[in-house]
Amino acid sequence: MAGVLFFPGCNLRCPWCHNRELVVGGEDGLIDIEEALGFISKRKQVLGGVVLSGGEPLLFYGLPQVIRKIKSLGLAVKIDTNGTNPAALEKICSDAETRPDYIALDLKLAPSRYAELLAEVNPQSTPTVSEKLLHGAEFIKSSQIPHEYRTLALPNNFITAKDIEELAPLVDESPWYFRLFRPGNCLDPGWDAMEVPGMEEANALAHKAKELGKKGISPTGGRY
Image 1 (spheres, rainbow, N blue to C red):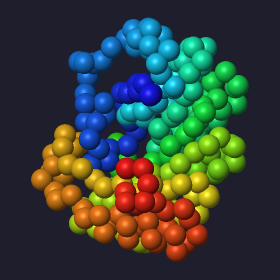
Image 2: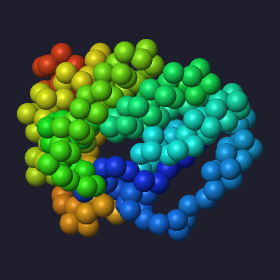
Image 3: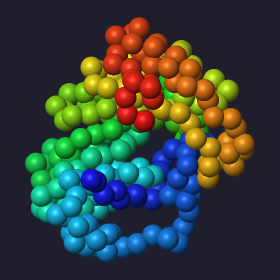
């Protein structure tokens, strides 16, 4: 059993994101980090680890201290990240006391399309965010930290085989999970009215990944 801490704030604005309040909301519903850590501490005997998610947890300035505290309780740490903050990732991985035990890298679209997801778009933003993603993915591959990749099958063929071809060089032999988009509380309310992609769409993306020599796993073939 794992506990999960969701951190507010994100540098991306994926319209399908189902954690709307964490991305654009204020402080309503948030609890103090010390209170959250106290909650985890009281339950350390029944927890195997803690997942740090969001939002984008690597944007939280106190993340190293949070990880250090969790590890001091004898718990493993998993980080969910979009990979576009490589400096922060490298910082926590360089210290044994803050080095995560597992990383899940969310690959949204082809790197060349990441400007579509930025909170603030300017002519210089596309290469910057793409380069950061490439840097982050390469670091994860070389880190020797167990990891996985995750991509959503989106409505209306928003992500296609071409995206998978461009993403494939970022992926090593670790599992690449393809899951289905689920509407509900989306960042862009228009996405709540979209139909859920069929299982065949996730399977097609996973099949493309396998054609490219990757360990593509669809909802019918593994974790969901």
